[in-house]
Length: 137
Image (tube, rainbow, N blue to C red; front, side, top):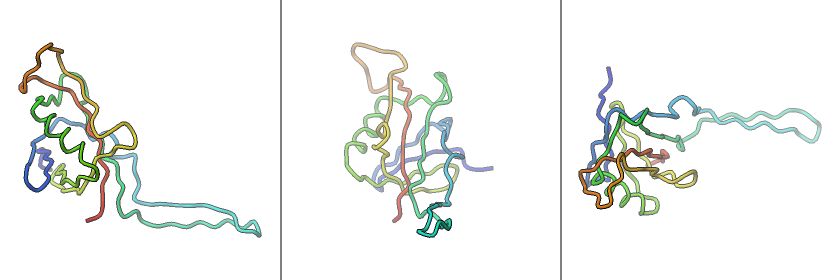
């Protein structure tokens, strides 16, 4: 059985994320890249290779009653998201992934308060989807 702890670290600060975050796109990515084209003679040309990086990792709550995060954790995540190309280590199920925020399709963070307060506190709860992209060291 794998380690249920999920952490995100920039090498100086480590955040423990709720272990109930669901890896939404775990099975929608393939390490195999393929291109198919036709030559001038009409022959089909197929090229195959292994992707070196670029795997999307989207972590989200399964529903509104799981994987809550505090506003304090969200503040740290937002600070990291605001740094272009910020490299972090996401440890998920005992495996470390070198990642950056995935800003090109919805942003690194999509969050909303569990309950809206006019004067929120750092201890208030937030539901958030986190989007990462693996990179090469």
